[in-house]
Image (cartoon, rainbow, N blue to C red; front, side, top):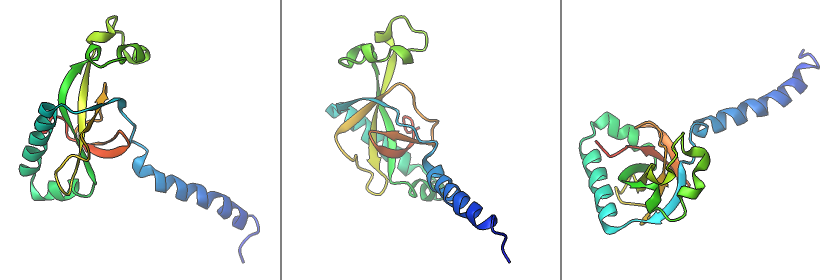
Length: 151
């Protein structure tokens, strides 16, 4: 016979446990995007070349692991915050002690579909911070494996 206290306790704790397990896969993923922009042709070309080289040089087991994710995020270029309209005024709390916010370097990230190796759009995402290479991060709503500059 099951004690009376056990059933209500299971009814309360089980949903909390299951909810924690369901969301734990994305709990490390933070949205790194601080601005959005359309890629210049050269930025799109650089990003595409970096993804192509990255995918070509993956060992089969690493490629299988990467393909379990839908998206890759690759750094195309670095851009001073002063070159992104309206950005330097928005990074006050994130400047990390810099007095000249316009000189802070940001990265222009593009997101690629792992199955096709093509960009998901012509948009890129300006970020100040990134996850470690090989880790998940959110860029413009896409949860992607960050591959840095592809090297």
